[in-house]
Image 1 (cartoon, rainbow, N blue to C red):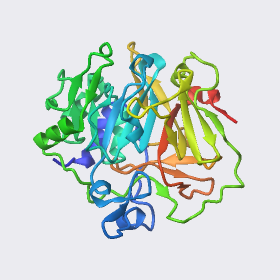
Image 2 (cartoon, rainbow, N blue to C red):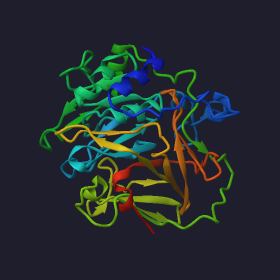
Image 3 (cartoon, rainbow, N blue to C red):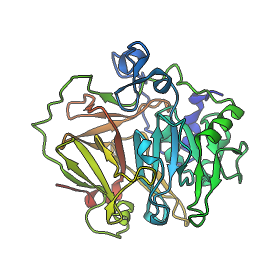
Image 4 (spheres, one colour):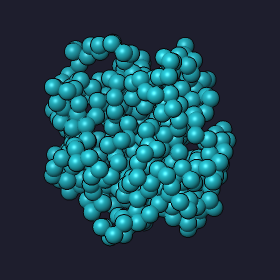
Length: 367
């Protein structure tokens, strides 16, 4: 089932995911075709949309999963999150953060999670990757209509308010208390994908979100400021900002060129591997946000505007300040631009994106 994407803007607006107020003439980067912008065929290998690396065609051509990962301390460590090539971290109600992992190579995963509920801004971000969206529960008043439409191919675990509940993807464990014990398996997800007749391959118009350095291309960001310790919510723990509540920060390791993730007073690890999470790129994407109701449900602007389009890209221990912008077509991914308006080249590899609520931008610490 392919998505009728042109109708999505109306639904997103109704759901309080703010529009950009400006239609772009084209959803593709200027001068680039879908093939030119990302995919370079080399026999049975293709360039990954998510990492810029060469991967097997069977992996690189299939749609990724966008999985909602629990990030409450009682639900940590997560299982399978190290397989996510891109991770989004955004505040939710209670001023904690929740994670969404975009996973390209997922078919062998037996345990993914724990899986938590949907928020509409995460759905909007997932659409930037043409991903199959996996969640257990949702804030129904704000996202129910979207999930029940054909606009997003979703695997929904909790049946309340869902017209097409997934019956195979999820299971509970006895090692944690509910709601922190819901997990998904790749086998079950595939059964539900087949039941709902979702396509496993990318939409023909999809061209990828990031612009990566080519194989053998050395990025020269030596003129930019150093940034080896980055705190999306500051150094002070347990403040109102969700990033501060989890104590989130990244430390750059010059030896391997990766940013290592910390939270809750220690290394952020994957329970599946026991290893610390590490990323080649970290992005701070500043967004205007609002509190919707007395339940503290939030809304974030997912397209950018004159008041909300600052970004900082961290790569190779440097920081490149610029802007982000997402075209009016909701199937188009956001682009990260430098001070000259050119797309910022990322190092090949994994990327972590922190959505920084503008109300808390002064809490950010970069050293």
